Structure formats: C-alpha cells, structure tokens
Length: 135
Image (cartoon, rainbow, N blue to C red; front, side, top):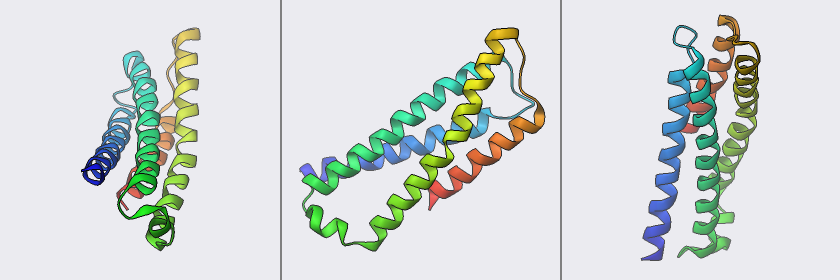
C-alpha cells in the first residue's frame, strides 16, 4: 500500500508541476499583461516552486521508503537523467522568477509594465522549461 501511495503522490506532484509551468506560459504574454497578471504570475511562480519541492520530496521518499529501495533506484541511469533534467529546469526557472519579481517591484514603484521583448524572452525560457519537463 505504501508503494502505491508514494507513487501516486509523486505522479500527482509531477502533474502539479506541469500545471503551474503551463499556467506561467499561458499568463506570460505581452498582449495579456496587466497589473493583475503580474501579481498572478508571482503567485503562480511561488506555487510552481512548492510543486517542484513536492516532486523532489516525494521522489526522495519513494526511493527511501519504496519497495525497490534506494540501492535499486540509484543504480538506474534513467533516474540520473531525470535528476539532471530536474536540476536543469530548476536552474532555468531562476531567470523567469527574477523577472517576475522585478516586474512586480516596478509595478508597485511606478505602475510600469515590462516591454514586449522582455515578456517574449521570459516566455521563451518558460516554454523551454515546459518542454524539458515533458521529457
């Protein structure tokens, strides 16, 4: 039963991660960007962080407490590939996160919104993350 619960929790966390990176991609469009969207992007990005932490925590729990055990998982090349992609995606998410925070500070300071080119650049980073996540 524990194995099933751990697998379910891990898959649910992965799906949650997919939902929130998709939400960021959908919201991060220059034609839709307004004050409410900038605030929402910051909230969605925070939830995306929690979803990523849930993926990591459930993955660690699954390897430590699961039926196959840590020794089996850590000898699997696919696990190392998944972890490498997870780290790459995590590092790539820093740039959009910093941009969202910068946009929120500018909005609160003087009501300004980012330019089209900046929004397109950030969205491109998000889309690359989303496509890597699908791997």
